[in-house]
Structures are given as structure tokens and as C-alpha cells.
Amino acid sequence: MPTVLVRRLLQVIPTLFGVTVLTFALMQVAPGEPLAQLLAGSADQTLNAGTSSANSAALRHAAGLDQPVPIQFARWLGRLATGDLGTSLINHRPVTELIAAALPNTLELALLALLISLGVGIPLGVLAARFRGTWIDSLVRLLAVAGHAIPTFWLGLVFILVFAVRLRLFPSGSAMSVGASPWDVGDRVRHLVGPVLVLSMAGIANYSRYARTELLDVLGQEYVRAARAKGLPESRVLGSHALRTALLPVITALGGVLASLVSGALVVEQVFAWPGMGRLAFDAAQAKDVPVVLATVLLSSVLLVVGFILRDVAYCLADPRIGRDSWRA
Image (cartoon, rainbow, N blue to C red):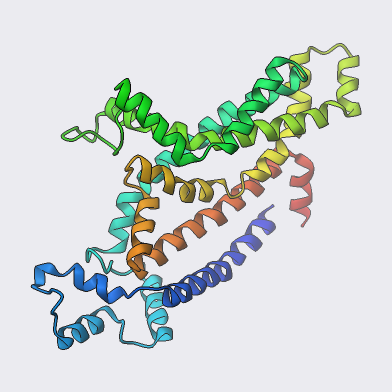
């Protein structure tokens, strides 16, 4: 396994480099002009629609937009090597500062949604496989279909309409109430309930379907029938023999789940006005704020690679045969 991990880590560098090159190129050909946003954000410098060409040239030079595209990219890479992600063209704040404020909110949202997806989806799949052909199985399968079919934004709007507007049980958006303390756990939990539940619905549908399908396949294998023939309790047959093997495909599906949740939180963050990475990336892409877009894409790529590495480790731990083969590799 160490050899495999080292090999995967060495593959990270060209992967991330290719992603940044592609993202930078796409931002250059995308419609819009970063300088227009830069001028719009410089009202404090008495700049307006009548800004002189001299001032425009000065601003373009200060932002490095007058350099050839390869030079701009090389300068960005040079700053990246020192840990500097640049400065936002919109609000003139360091990109690292913007990400430091938004990333914890998104990770909190994504990780809680992942825990609920696994904690609810897998038991539902096991329950459906255990009572195959009954009303329980039909109900779980209906939930899986609904979780895939219902758009996330629609589900979020329904939650706000019912639980925030009508019943007034939960707030309609934001991460905390106005004037609330950052250490007010109760207020934070109330704001988390809506976006976490909405974001986890698709995961619950996915993992319940994976668990049910794989468990039904495993329950028909000979070693499971042999365990039953020995008189073992059904709970032990499911938990100790069948479920561990059935979870391997679920672990495979977890490879890109962290990056998927972070990027998939965009819709939820927009609906619930959640101050996270999704909203930050969306606003930056609309404004063609190249430093922020590059940083958010790079961070999502890192999360994707880390997710795949953690998946390989979990796979080795779940299946000892894979672990032994990895050590020999």
C-alpha cells in the first residue's frame, strides 16, 4: 500500500497542473472583461463610466492584465509556489482570505450531509434487501427514485416555504441570525437543518440503491448460504458476512463524493444564502474574477484527488485481499 500511495501522490502534480492550465485557458476565452468588474469595484477611487483611458491602462497594468496570457499564468504559478493565491479583482481582498472564510462553511455543510447520506442511506438499503418484495422494499425504492427525480433547488424552496415561512420552525437562509454569537450552537444548528437535509437527499437515494443492489447479489452467494446453513442468526449473516463485501462498491462510489458535495452545494448555498465556496465560485465566474476562479477550481481538484486516495485506503482496509496485493505492488 505505501508504494501505491506514493505513486498516487506523484500523479497529483501533473493532474493539478493540467486542471489549472485548462481553467486559465477557459477563463481567457469566456465572454466578459475582468477590467470592467475591476472598474466597477473601484468606486472608492472616484472611478465611474467616464474613467479615462490612462486610468484604465494603469488599472490593467496593476492587475497584470496587460501581460501576455502565458506570462500571466506563469506569474500566477510563481505566486502559488509561495502560497499566494493572488488578490480578488472584485473586492481587492486576498483570495486566501476569501477561501478561509467560505471553505469551513461548505465543509461543515458537505460533511454533515455525507454523514446523513451514509447513516440513513445504507441502513435503508440493508432494510430493503432484507425484506425484498415487501412494502418496506417498495417504500425504500420509491424514496430512491424520488431522491433522484426531485431537483435540489425545488426541494430547498419547498423546505423554505413550509418550514420557514408557514411553520416558522427554521430560518429561511444565511449561516446565523443577525446579532447572534458565532458560538451560539443552537442558532447554528437551526440554520444547518435545511441545507443539510436538502443536500443529503440525493446521497440517501444513491447509497440506499447501491446497498440494496449489492447486498441482494451477495446474499445469493455460496458462503452466505453456508453461514445460514450453520444456523447463524440472520443479523450476524448480514452484518459479519454479507454487508462487508456489499459495501465495497459503495466505497468505490465515495471516491469523488467530497468534491461532488462541495461543488454540488452551489445550488443549496444559493437557495439558502449560505456563505460557502459554491457562492464564492459562482460569483467569481460571473464577474470573471480569474484569481478566485483558479483558486476554487484548484481546491476542488485537490479535494477530488484526496477523496480518491482515501477511497483506496478504505478499500484496502475493507478487503484484506486488496491490502495484501497493494503491499506486494
